[in-house]
Amino acid sequence: MYIKQGYAVIAYLLGLFYLNHIMLYLSPLEDPDDHDTLLRTEREKDEYKGFQRKITEFEFWKSIFAATFAAAIGSFFESTDIEIYWPLLMCYFIMMTLFLCRVKIEHMVRYNYIPFEIGKEKYSKEQSDGV
Image (cartoon, rainbow, N blue to C red; front, side, top):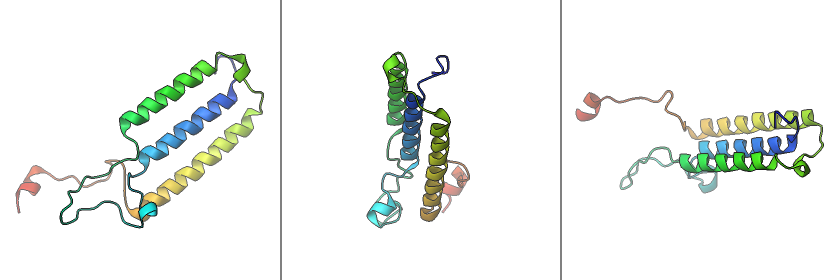
């Protein structure tokens, strides 16, 4: 796409697909907004399973690779090169990214979950062995 200086629509759709899958990867399996419950926590008979994602890492990479491959194949055909004013698509994509990131961060703060290991408390073996 960069070499041919075209196919802005394909690049835009591929970017939206990436953005959607990143948001799915950062989302918990059981969304508190859907069930009116807090995220899965340790209950009396239920084992704590940690943060479970809507899509697994394997599914994430598999779909990203498939979409990239499909976009690359689509860029070989002149019929998929639709004439469009590309700065408009770029501005719209940036606005969508900022909006979705803000919504996702607000959701993480509201329900107190972090899908990364950054900033989480780490326990040593000595702390867990001693009662």
